[in-house]
Each structure stands twice: as structure tokens, then as C-alpha cells.
Length: 228
Image 1: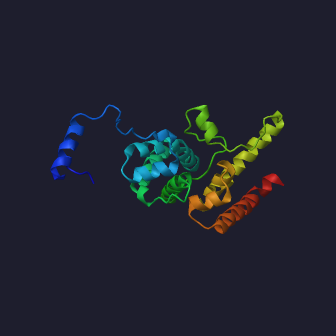
Image 2: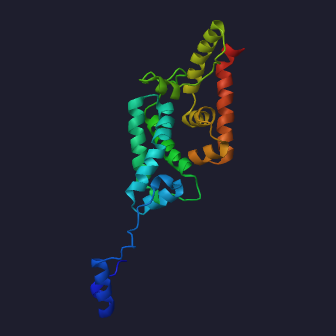
Image 3: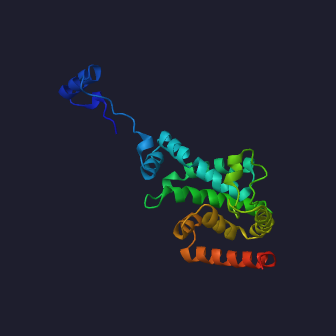
């Protein structure tokens, strides 16, 4: 808490007043933190203390990963933008509950995932396109939202086979329950480790393995006619 000059003893108050009016030349005001150089945990702590600039730095770091995850799940750019914005608002309101013992990236993606799952449960998404969202407006957006099942050195016949298989895969993934779909996307598209998926989805590690095991079993059964 700041101390007012008037509340100090008279001899100290006079000296403090002189310093305030004529500070020493070698005294420099405290510089603002270099937010870009701080770790996520440090930024989160500052954000929780009311430093808006710290949260803006976190937003800059994670707006793309959050949008990418949501975009892959809902396959619609406008919806993904809205959901990402809403997820960050939720994160900002809950920043005081963030525990620095956890990776901030997992914490923010957990909020984004839960919010998107709630959305999907209210408005079911029928399929996931392996060729990218039909709402993608640039090649980069298509690349971000496609599931690659082909190699670059395939011949035209193999390419056609992979395209036909891809159509079946997108239908099969679209038929998975939300939890299974999320686990598959986080593992096989985003490349997260099992323990990170558990933290993001807020479920035990064993549950993640169960989700993936069952999802793969369902996918194998769905794709059996076209892969046999």
C-alpha cells in the first residue's frame, strides 16, 4: 500500500517531498515488464493480478492454436471465430483459478475444448472433411483443417483410392461421439501426447486410452468394407 507524504514524520516528509519534486538523475522509473520475454506461467500470474497487457500477450501466443483446434472440430470459420473468442473470454474470467503447476497451453485448450464440446452437443456436426473445411477461404485454412491420408509420391490410381477412402474416413470420424472425436483429433491431428490429452479433456489418462481404443475400434468396423 502506498504511503502518503503527509502521513510521514515531518523530517521524513520534507525529504520525501523534495525527492518527488527533484528526483536524483540516476534514479530511473521502473520499466514495464518485457511481456514477450516472460514464460506463460509468469504472464498468467500477472494477468490474474490485473495486468491486461499480460493477458494480451497470452492471447497473441494462443489465439492461433485455440482457433485451429476449434476449427478442426466445428469445420466452420465463423463458428470457430466466435467460439474461440468466447473461449478466451472464459479464460480471462477464470485466469485466477489457473495453477502454475500446469502447462498454460493445456489449460487454455481445455477451456476451448470444453466450450466447443458444449456447442457440438447442442448442434451436431455431421461429418469431418479430410479435404478441409468447405468454409475455408485460403489454402492455409484448408491445410489446417484437412486430415492427410495420402503421400506425395502416389500415382493417380493411388490418389483416387485414397480420395475414396478419405470420404469414408470423414464419415466414420463424423459418426464418433464427441469425446472420441476430440481424442482422435488431439492425438492424430494435433499430435498431443496422451497425458496432455488427459489434461486438456480433464479426464484420467486411462480414460483417454479408452476413448482412443474404442474410437479406433469403431473406425475399423466402419471402414472394414472399404479396407478389406
